[in-house]
Length: 305
Image (tube, rainbow, N blue to C red):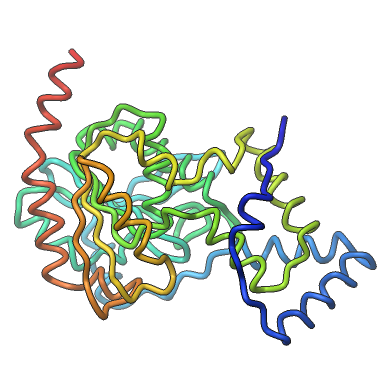
């Protein structure tokens, strides 16, 4: 297949690299010439291996309450849990997260008459695999939404890379669920190349590894950047993003909300990338948004009959 031209992202990141990183980069470059397979394995493991935090007692208790479900995605078992019997809200976590990290949403959602469906992405938590990537996480989302368990999904709440995955999926789907995108990684490609350069990874090495991902999935990564795909999605969307988020900058979220009529934006202050998920006013806003757009989904589904 024809691979992506990554020069656009390589030249647009404007990364300031410290002397220590430059020195480490020289070591990696030398390693690349002496033992190319070794450095490829090292970088592959570093950048494609998630590291979720251990479960808290509260999270374990939520899992114990839930019905356990397993589906397959690309030959790996994906672990899901469901609680409740009403219309379903699907929760999609980000890189190195867990489905149960949305724990603070669960009881309010249940009290509002919803059921909650959450899962561990490939190579995360209780799902199978050691390494994964954006395209594989997207495939797992696709398989859930097309599975019997996903037929009653009326709303989707996602975080970070999980938001990128659902945007990627919906760019090729007519599913009409309303979306709540929290701290979305909209400029995912730019974030990826910034991190690769910050860590001093030789260009030859990371381009080869990204080309391998493209070969495996037969998709050009440059065509799947969420910031480009979101403009083709007609679902009702609420973006919640903290102004102090240092992991996924708020700028692209604000830009999208300014330019798209189907996007509502709520900014927060002082909660960063992850703590925003635990704020009561964020949870209330997300659930009210999904409730207010339920009738839209019913009308869209009726129009397809």
